[in-house]
Image (cartoon, rainbow, N blue to C red):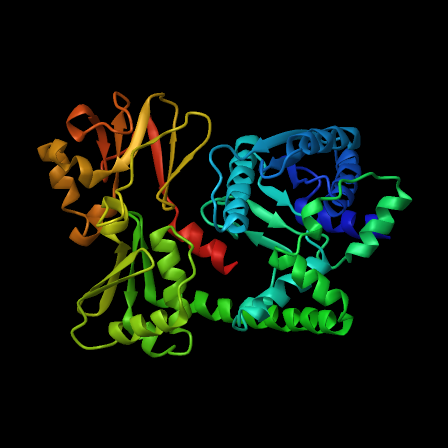
Amino acid sequence: MLVQEISDHLTRVAGKNGPPLSVAFSGGGDSTALLFIVCEWAKRQARPVFALIVDHGLREGSGKEAELAAKRAQAMGAQAKILRWEGVKPDTGIQEKARQARYKLLGETCRQLGSVQLLLGHTRDDQAETLFMRAQKHSGWRGFAGMGIRRLAPIWPELYAVEIMRPLLDVSRDELRRFNAENHLEFIDDPSNENHKFARIRARTALAKMPEVKDQFLCTAMHAQKCLREEKNKIKTVLAAHVKIHKWGGASLETQGLKVNSELAPQILKYLIHAVSGEAQAIPLDKLNGLNAKLLKPGFRGATLGGAQFVGGKHDVLIVRDPGAVLGRKQKPSKLPIALSTQTPTLWDGRFLVETDQAGLNMAPLMTYADQLDKQQKQALKNIPEPARAGLPCILRDNMSGGSTSEECELLWAYPQQTGATFRLTCLIGAHLQAMLN
């Protein structure tokens, strides 16, 4: 029954033909059941499946566990790839930083493989635990919507262009354990699942004693998801009527849209800030309300919040990237040049996607190299609103290191010149908005 349900779901959402599917595979009980079902379905479709195994390197023996998971994945018919979190590990906030690193590795690998769908083994129990933890943090009703079965790029920019699917979200952990036993599937028991130092394990233990509370949480999630879908549809209507997206990486907002949709205004601003900043950190509701009040005051001139800058105009507000977030400010360094890949598109500042077939190129903030602009480039730059120029990119010839000065670098291209055949630049603000509101 479970196999048929998940197979039917995959046929509906993934189709019979298409690019490879990727499964985040830990080797644990949930992801083992998921990978087995996906591989059985994919064999009938002649569809390749990749098992992506992240080794955080946080426990002794994690490398051996990753190798064991890879062998078991291959035995099920998947192509296994072990992704390792390299470098010095943080001393604080380890769970959140490990999560960010994990999704960064998964997103990068999916894009390299040409896989646009990443399947996760989250279960009904995981959903309840998530809601329990959010309740402890006094999350608002939107937080109680929990995880969705399908989401496009839910974590930005790590998962841009990747759709997350959770086909087991209505299945219990006990049901999956029975499935594994019936199919003689071995899996790894992660010892951290018994470590009450972690909030999720404490939530799991508490909910095990309160099954009725678990059911209430899951029922709440269904209602909250419905309300959230309705809210997002209303916001899309407002944005279509009152917002213009600019290909140079900003937006214009008619303040009338905030006035006539006052109950939605803080959320409208939240989505616009995330899209224009290319960032995704949470923004407190009181700050969004405060910004909304400022924007609606006569004579509003400017404000910054969440990596975005708001500049007042006669009838609308210009929203651009916060210059300090790109060029640097006290105790915050400027963005360093990043190397462009010839193999996969490169995301810059969470807002621009660059594709090139030429090796040895870097992308950097344009204003850092403004002294190298020629007369024609300076003239072209006048077509961009002055507040937006600090957030624009340029492309450099690679004759430098991370510590090079602007005098040592050759400016090859500057926004808004035509990109030509050497490289292509795409603004992702509209795509980011669409992903958040899908």
